[in-house]
Amino acid sequence: MAPKVLVTRIIPERPLALLQEKAEVSINLEDQAMPAEEMIAQLPRKVALLSMGGDQISAKVLETGKDLKIVANDAVGFNNIDLAAATRWKIAVTNTPDVLTDTTADLTFALILGVARRVAEADRFVRAGKWVGWKPDLFLGSDIYGKTLGIIGFGRIGMAMAQRALGFKMQILYTDVRPIERSVEERYRVKFASLKELLREADFVTLHVSLTPETTHLIAREELGMMKRTAFLLNASRGPVIDEKALVEALKSGMIAGAGLDVFEEEPRVTPELLLMENVLLLPHIGSATFETREKMAFVAVNNILSVLRGEIPPNILNPEIYR
Ligand code: GLV
Image (cartoon, rainbow, N blue to C red; front, top):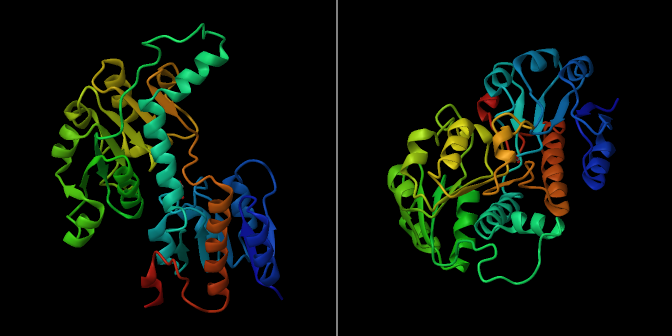
C-alpha cells in the first residue's frame, strides 16, 4: 500500500506529480490555509506532512500524527513548527534553504528601491489622475547608489544582499553573532559592526535573521532611535523581529525616513496606521514568490519526504538528533 501523505496547500504540478508517483496524496485544494482541526482530523495514518510557512504545526497537531515520520515545511523559516515537540516524537522536520536565497534578496532589494524612490506612491499618484506634468521636485527620493547598507544576519540571504549591494557601489556593514571568515568578508567587501554601530551608520538597515526568542523584537524603540532620521528599515525575514508598534511611532515622529515590509507581526493583519503612511512600502509576504522558486521549493520539500520514505535521512533535516 502506498504511504499516505498530507499536503496542506496546492503545490506546483511537477513536484506534486513526483510525490504522487510514490505516495497516496491528500491535498487541500481550497484557496485558503487548512484549518488546524482539519489537519488534526486528517493526520492519523499519514506518514508525511508537507506544510507551508503559514501553517501552525503545534505540539497538539503533531501529537495526532501517530504514524508521522516527517514534516517537510515548504519554506526556509520554520518558526511555525514546534521543533522541540517534533524532536520528542522523533518526527523529522525539514525546510527549503538555498533555492530561495536569491529570490528573497531580489525582493528585499525591490523594497529598498521601492521605498527610497517612492515607486508605489508615485504609481498611486499616476493612477489617481493627479499627474499634470513634469515638475522639478516631483517625488524626490533618496539615492541608493553609494549609500551604506547595514545587513543584520549575515547568512545566505544576507550575503546575497551584499552581492547585490556591490553592484550599487554601496558600503556594506553587517552584524551577526560573530564575524565571518576574513576571506568571505573580502569577497563581499563587508565590514563587521556591532548592532549599535550598524544602526547608527547605515542608510538602509535590512533584516535577515531567523525568528527565535533572541531575535524577537530585536528592533524596538531603542534601536529605532539609534537609526539616522534619513534611514530606511527593510524586513523580509519575519514580522516579530520588529516591534511593529514601536516602528509606527518611529515613522510617525520622523525618527526614521521610511520602511519596506514584506512581513508583519500578526499576518495577515497590518497595523492600520501603516496603511495610511506614504513612506512605507507594504507587501504581502512574497519574498520567495516567483514561479521558478516556488517550484524549486516544492521539489525540495517533496525530495525530503521521498528520502524519508526510502528510509534515508532527509537532506534538509533540522533535528538530526532524532537519528542518534
Ligand atoms: C518564507 O517566508 C520562507 O520562510 O520561506
